[in-house]
Image (tube, rainbow, N blue to C red; front, side, top):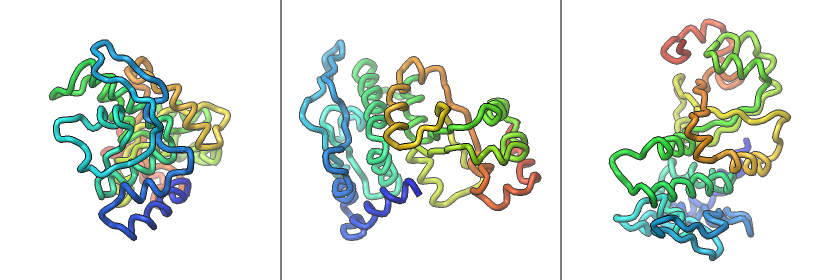
Length: 254
């Protein structure tokens, strides 16, 4: 439901102009809350990038991205988000609408890494972590016993023994590739989840502000994510009400 309030509005505009997803996303931007790519100028050592100070605004067609320019670098420099007409970029756009500060921070770190290291065959540890989070992250606010079970991959304790404790849980799916997978769900979909602090952060704005502060190179390089099969979350699939559901070792790995 939290995603629906963003997605339904965008989809309505997109249906009117099927080849213009970027325009549909722009029409769905809250007034005065355009995606902010960089709030302060950043000088890299090689001066390859200097952040502009004009107001950040919008999504543009994928055709506006030059073939010789890295996607993340272009976003940071021009404050434009190249967008294709597909489900993957639809969900990416929704993430920008819902969590603009965190998306901007991820982009800022990607651009800084590109400016200092260039674009090679391998992203490197930091960019790999940034990409994994951007594509596949989930945010989980849960009581300590659930976190301990997740860390230990004790799936029965996490999803069966402590099932009632999930009433105290807030799970937010952040990764846009993860959201796209749920269009055609399968048992093995796994999120890389990050611990949200207790007490519960209620609003998206609170979550976005907290997450933006957490997304630093030193933090991301510690690989703070834990894999969690979404099929086990109570209420997501009726089949997971049966303990035998969790005996599938291809999904619920030791």
